[in-house]
Image (cartoon, rainbow, N blue to C red; front, side, top):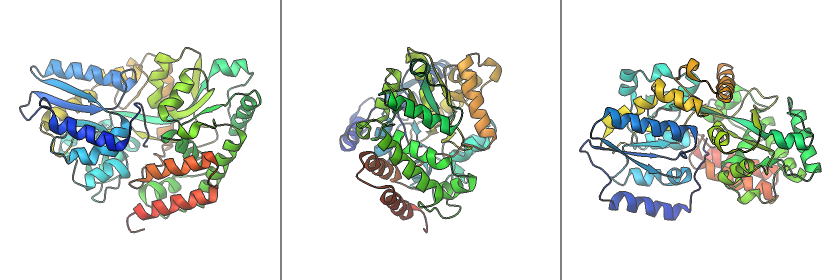
Length: 430
């Protein structure tokens, strides 16, 4: 999914220039002397992944005397928009976090910008640590389609979406935790009647489009997902699921479930609205879980979307090794450390969803619940990936078109027409 996420990005044009200046003009960017591992990722320090990877850096430097990790924090949107340019600049990092899916990692692999990791995967046994539903986004065909082919990325965590809710606000307004979709909409109506905008979202980035995709998933099945994400059949954006999603989302806007100013809000704004106790509910991913554990000052909980067998989710973002990386062996060693039980256990206890942890070592009750819900979804084939994945550039289309639904400047039928046109242009042989 795209999505995501944690660090607010600035304008793409200025970012591209800044990245190129930083990479091409820096005298300490590291070289092929085997003494520096240049690492890029966009996890905040207080996220579960950020904490786990900081521990991995310490472990790496301890086990590689004389080698230093040069970590460079990048914004999600920053990497998303500029990766092809930077990776073609001749001074790529040795290892970077990158979003998974056809439109992102798949596109880079097709362009020849990523290293084929297949040999390392076999030698180090990474494939044996990843469940089938998690490893789908690690492999890409020669056309850049996920699910088969060579390995171009390794996820060391998994993720899925859920509804976070503020138990204190629910108690204050006499609202019970919903167990069904009907109870969810009844809860939203109660908050609106009390003058409270119930749902945190951000129309300027991924959150709004993920609400809409989840509404569609509640009326869909695995074959529908495979047609949309893997091109195993034709996707019709005017089918029952997509039509229901667009019409329901537009209706929710009219009912006041979303804030009128949400069209300009980013993911960080939505998350902060929940953290600050302003929004009773926020539908988003497990990548927020660790941060909410550390920053929320109220009683809170989470539940999966009611009355739906599918939800957004997959293996986490990928460790990818750029084709032009100068210290690939060091990058492989770092990936290996992040897949170790020591780091996986840290990730799990900090509120992440590990892929290779010792379950007995996960002692935090909330973390156990989080991981248990993910395992249930995964075991029931309930992970349905993310809406922006199928074709390159679709993320921006989803953002701009969903903003139009929020403002009311576009009707559901026209919205679905726009998605169909953009999707068909990107699907191979469509």
